[in-house]
Image (cartoon, rainbow, N blue to C red; front, side, top):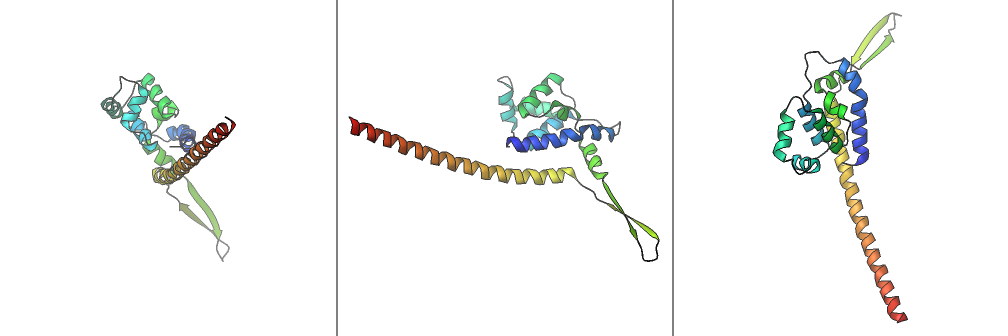
Length: 178
């Protein structure tokens, strides 16, 4: 995932963590292992790749075990957050249900006057599922990333061709001088 996409995604989530915690039930537990899995998958990183980036003593199986734990050692969570390039608070505090509740609290209330001069209140509640929006945004970002990758490869090929031609030109000029 490109740096800009990761930055936007993480900042969106980080900005709302404090507000989301206030809407959370006291009984609701935060599953840090699921948070690791959720953000690893959102960022398109496989368990093997995460294990490789964490060090030689890590394996896919060990990452899988971490993702199944409800709570994760803070030092380990810091290391994982550093590899994923996201704030550790996201992994520590993100609660899916709180996020859904937070975004579902937005109401659009308007008042309309009827022809008799009386007020009629209309409340239009708009339910917004952030994960559906997030999945859609991730799909769009993958498409954009793929297009950027193609352009990068094309640009790289053109640069290599230009470099090859310049080297041939230099060789030709050197042979003429000799």
